[in-house]
Length: 132
Image (cartoon, rainbow, N blue to C red; front, side, top):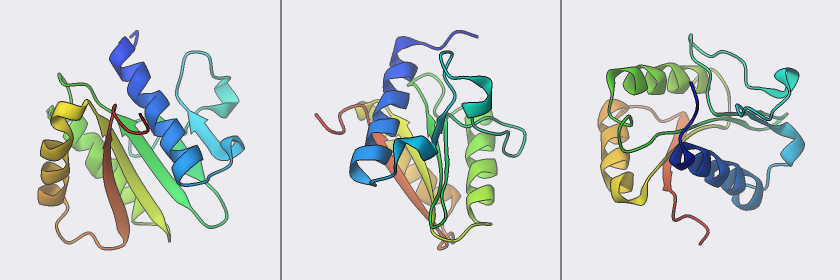
């Protein structure tokens, strides 16, 4: 299925956030994009392919981008659960979610509700306005 321009933009924002703000070398950032070579794409995690996957000696990150239409869908909620569960298996891990700016607060609240006791995984939500 072709990705929407909004989804592609959100994935780009996630990648920028990871490289520029979290200071992760771009060579460790695996992105699920049509232009990415197959051996440089993220692995399947809990039956789903995240938009971005990072594993370094000291850091583990799964990042996913969602549009206004799908950030609350059952499929997306199942993905969040699979991704956070995988992150919980690693030290110094993070789950990042990117959504359009209008949904950033709602998405943050939703993730706090879904994962209230999750202390080993840092969970953050960014929007398409990050870095502007």
